[in-house]
Image (cartoon, rainbow, N blue to C red; front, side):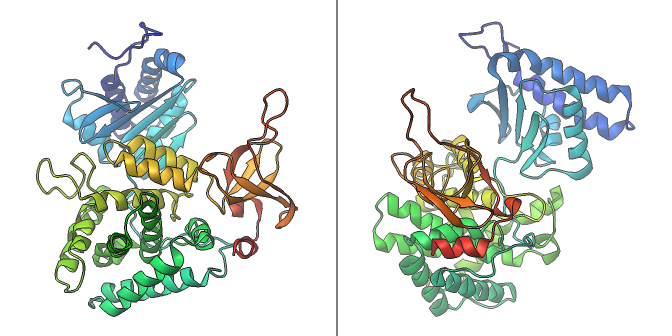
Amino acid sequence: MSGLTTKEQPDAVLEPGAVVRSFAGLIKNISLYPEGHPTIDQGAESLRSLLAPVLETFGTLSIDIIDGETHVDGRSYRCANDIVPQEIQVLTDLGIESLTFEAGVRGVELRALAESLTNRGTDVFQSSGKARVAQLVAVDAGGQPRQWPDKPAQAWDSSYAEALERANETFDGVAAGSQIDLDELGALVQVITESVAGNSTALSQVLLLKEFENHTYCHSVNVTVLSLLIAERIGLADAVAAVIAEAALLHDIGKMRIPKEILNKPGPLDPREWQVVRRHPRVGAEILLHMDGLHPLTPTVALEHHMDYVGGGYPEVGQGHRPHPISQLVAVADIYESLTGARSYRDPATPQMACLILARLAGEKLNPAFVRTFVSAITFFPAGTIVRTNLNEIGLVVATSEKEPVHPTIRLIEDGGLAPVETVTDTSLRDDSGQYLRHIEETLRPDSIGLDLDSILGDLS
């Protein structure tokens, strides 16, 4: 096989098919042979040797599998004759759609990663040292969120709290087999569009609280708020925004008909359970189609929100079908919220990691224009984010700038509380040598450093 090369290093040849085949073979060998069998170590070392020359040149390598086609660092690489369907199936049965390797990865790390997948399946971000796998699209299975010890006692913004309460009642009713109360639905949409969306305080709390609550109703309210953020940024009329709000709010309504033992499972789903969850778009569309008074696009968005921008995804409705633009818009908000929301079996992704994943999905899975609009609006460090600076200071992001998206305004936190040391109005300031006076190095979970979230929410309100 010819492989891929670069102008800078023509001798650094990448054979993505061989990498996928080798990794799938390692997983199969772990299933077949007892622990410690030399065949397993030989397979891990073979994969390491295959990766080494490419990683020495490029530093990292990302291979994505999208609808059976391999993509290397975002570029389509057709190698249908190089990877057989059974090898693809070994990975996709475990939920693996993306492989990432970094320079210096060791055989023991590759073996440990493959063993962890064989033993426990995979979540959205599973890694061992400098090797990791991922699902390109995180399907929110709803269920019970992790009960964090310092979960906020309340949603400080009253309009957001009201929206959550009304949504909970609506979704509980559907789960019990009741019809949606259109008057109640209209009131909920009005609360979100008029009082929550566009409210910087409420948005900050949406972005912070979702790390602690991620029931389907909470996820749906958050997706609605984030969808309206995109709609506002691209200048859609109020009437269109109202349609988007209704559709986004009900996009996951089909999950209310998923068996509770699957919906509430405290961990990754096995392949059979994934197939059950993957039925929720069609189930949701059927529920909404039988309701009078909804906008005609509402069941369409429920059906299409997991379909790909260029066609594909699920459910299958015919070759070449592309989702409606409103479905494409809601999909961006849905994936971001799913990645950054609470899960019982993993920590939420940081905002910057989620934005990077959106960027990788843009153009095939997601509408690139909507992704650009969303990322520029939400930024890598949205208000309410706790960050650490290069001076080892802890700060609360209190404002962002479109012109300087990676340089927000932060309020420094002292002694684990929220006593302000000073407000930094411009983290992009440099000294005479051109070096940053202060810049953000990482995002932190509030509970990891013992912050009082009720104090943070109160300070943002």
